[in-house]
Amino acid sequence: MTATHIPPSLAREIIAHIGRNAPLREAQAYRYLRDAGFTIDELALMAGRRPAFIGWRLDLLKLCQRGQSTLDAGRITWNLAWEIAQLSHPSQNVMLTRWARGEFASSKEAEQAARALAADENDTPVPQQTRERVSDAAGRHWTKEEDQWLLDHWDHSNAQLAEDLGRTENAIPHRRRALRPEEFASRTR
Image (cartoon, rainbow, N blue to C red; front, side, top):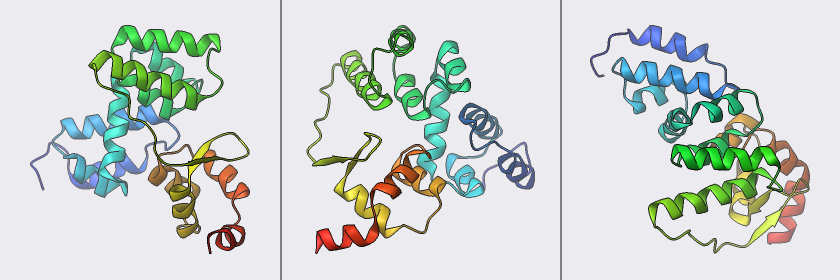
């Protein structure tokens, strides 16, 4: 345990009262606790989350003010907000303007554009997807590996599945409806 300015019991209380559907509030609370001396691993243990999840939430604080306002208002998903947060502030404004104009067919398309823009900023190639993808009824792309993982963890809550798969919580029920375990089992054997 690291030396902190806040007792661990109080930190657990703060984490317990964070709104799960308020990613920026959650990120601000994690930053406050991290600044108080807690490590990301300790925060993850107290929150019952993976350390990567805590890091993703903290990354949302890199969003420009306009991006944070858009996320708070629910006009973009936190996945898209995270992708936009990886950009410089001028590029963030470009992506937010394009999103507001409706230039993207879906948030996934906007996420891909943000990744491409980040690759341009960093002069790195955009990684190519080599896995075969299938779409659910809502048009979200899922790999066969993700489908199998979803089936293996069928009894988990939507929130836990969304966190572990890096999806939004509302994507999981759609995928569950589209993917019946008995149908998948008969297709793979």
